[in-house]
Image (cartoon, rainbow, N blue to C red; front, side, top):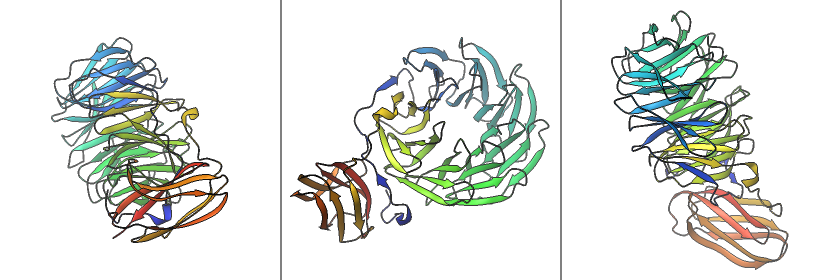
Length: 449
């Protein structure tokens, strides 16, 4: 976590974070790191991709292994279901993509023709085609029913990272090491627009639900929203480090971004205004995903956790703690009651995160104010309690480890004021945890030296 890296205008109120052990199923069997884990549209199956050169399909309810997809001869970096859930497409560093029957695990087609590693593949919305992106500077469109090459998209001057269809299937967008994204006509393969403006590799992209906009992410520390009809830049969204995995909310009103600066951010897609900075991870955030109604956001981090956030409030709701390595992806099922995560520790986990397991802040807490924040030497903490008993205020790190207890005294109902000396606590981001008979509340604080 960077010292002196704080966001005053978006100070986060952490609401009674639920860190107790959540119900989980561990998907074990891969012999190298997992890169992705995704639900099928029905939420009944999960497909995982791994550096062990296999993808695997699992029963989402029981965690039972259904099929192991063998055939690639090098690491697999992506595996996705078709929109009807009947097929899976995988990509590998063996320069191929492959299409599989999700019901039987049978190999249907091998898509050969790329001359370097294939990084990404996605079905068209109607399932008729697949687009692949590779490190040979090209994307290719394939007939998903025959495996035949339809057309090759050429024009980039660097490795391609992603290629996806718009929701209607009429356009494809690609992202590249050459610092651009390009929009193509999906039927003809004609180049429609080159989105120029990023100053470093463009790592990922997402269409808005109506297809009128795209958001790109880049190692230049920005995400950018573009108009797909004109190719013009609409908004630039800033992080302080590399940005990955931008996503629109299901209604298109919001954009979420994942940062290597250890925060996720939620933006107003129409105005480009920053709404919330989601601080709490203690490592780079690799990906973010909304649930189906846009009320929750999942973030996956190199700190070995995933976290669930309340989108409207910008507050932390659950910490999914149990992996022993980087967590690369976190995805909600269609009901938002479960999340699947993929990790460097060679496992995926399915977590139950239903609303009954989310603990709200105690109703007894009111009027909590910490100032100045950030601070270098001391802070004033004001709060009100409704009950008698012991009140404890502790400073913890972002993983919940106690750094120092600064207040411990019996209190009566009413308003309270405490002047807290910060002493020699190093610069950084912390949590001020206040416990009393009313319950527990947590507030993000920053210390500068």
